[in-house]
Image 1 (cartoon, rainbow, N blue to C red):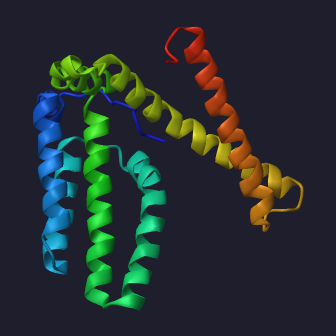
Image 2 (spheres, one colour):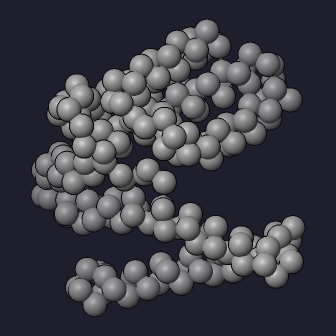
Length: 199
């Protein structure tokens, strides 16, 4: 799982300011969603692959990180094909993969601390209306850290269900998974309250 995992390097993307990278990601994301057509989607996928090559993303780690996204993208594409047309399905598939690859490239080439510091700077003026930038940054950091942990809980719960011979039962997997995720959220909340951050 490479979410939130920065890989040091000396590429152009590593040296770019975090603001420029976030702005570029936002512009490209809007363009991918707004511009229609399978040929345009192919073009954006090429752009995403070029950025990944420039950032020197590890091929094996990238494939692992995109595997879940690819499964979801294929399911969405099949639904689009059934409801609309093959061109619409292909466009949806390529757009989702492009968005995921661009986001992954940003994550791998940008330290999480730099991103959070930038968020704190940008929303600093909102202190006047009662918004705490540090609290917002803490929330984002916790979300980034919680995702790999939640995925690990899912794998553990699935393996436990299989060990009991209940691998095909959604209830045997989903019920304990939800309970464990909620329990972890309560533990995190209690820890924040103990440090005076729960209000």
